[in-house]
Image (tube, rainbow, N blue to C red; front, side):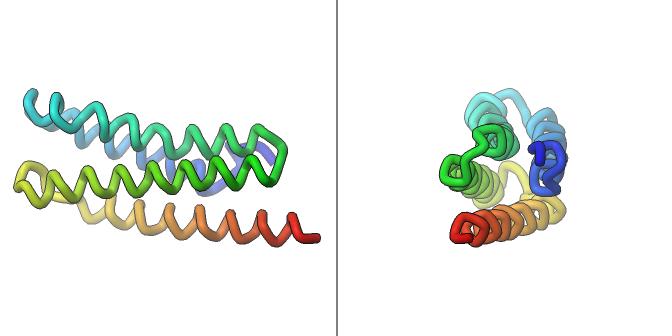
Length: 118
C-alpha cells in the first residue's frame, strides 16, 4: 500500500491546505511569530506518514507515525496559544480534523502493531 492510499494521509493533506489558508490571513507580526512554525508542523504530519510508509518496515513506520503524532500535537498547541492570546480563533473544523487525524494515526499504529505480531 502506498501512502497516497492511506485515508489519514489524505486527511492530513487537507489539513495542510486549511492551516495554510489560516496563516495567510494572519497579519505580518503573527505570521512572523507563529506562521512559519505552524506551517512546518502541519507539513510534517503527512510528510512523516509518507516517509514511514515508504520505509517498508513496520518498526520504521511506527516510528514515523509517532513523529507525525508529535507534529500534530505541536500544531494543536500553537493554534491553542494563538486562541488563548486572542490573536486567532481556533477554527472548529480544524480542531475536529486534529481530533480525527489523531484517532486515525493511533488506529493505524494499533493495526500495524497487530500485523507485526503475526
